[in-house]
Length: 353
Image (tube, rainbow, N blue to C red; front, side, top):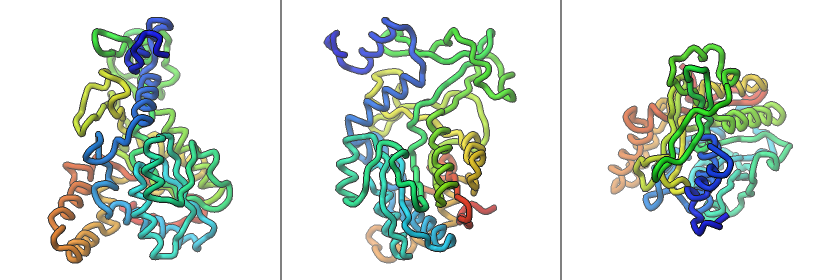
């Protein structure tokens, strides 16, 4: 692959495109993120971005309490499995399982993780976890408690653009020292929902086949085995047009078409497209609500007060972390929480109203 002497992903893409023609944006994003996540631990102050579990233990604790409440309402079924998709450093699992254990919930622990670099960190955090490349090897017996925090946003998106000749897939070609998108030659109108086909020229319809497949599979497991699921990510709960592709490196937004594989490429999650997919399999869609509202209703403000009272020297940091998680100007409104449940699994704190 490095015959040209340069094994950077940009060079590989240039050779591939010169040989076979433009590549799809979905191909570009998928390969870029595979290179990126397999080569480093991207989390924390020394990495490229910080996720909610790294901001405060309160985030994971409240997820653990939500899962325990769902499990108790379902009759404390056993054996039961905790399955986290893209568990990062294992911080969320550690905090959630510690909180859940207080209510008797001690599930087997399963991580779906493709990054070799992150597996080593997860092993140190949760020594008893079992690793899986995908959901196919997760146990087929017993209810499952799924958690996916900032997992769907990193799955590659497909973008279709409206042209005077109809809808076309956005393809990637090199231009100077970066890459740019162009409209592909193949008509793609059938791939656009009929209600959205009459958009003006230049409109972009973004979809994520990987997110749809993940939710479809999770909902199927909930129907077959019972359990509940939380998908937490930044995104929207109503259909919209436009590209949401972005890149982050060293906590700053950078050009997603420059130096592929060296930054985290993400796109906003279209939760409005995912809820009907879960329902199509018979799973109960509990709701999709802003993260700030969900955490408030689960008691994050009272938890922050208790932590501050126990450790007054950290009170200011605890307050700052809480505000970052729930304030509308920070993560509170942009991030959404979607809940799903299997048959006989009632409840779902935080989603009412």
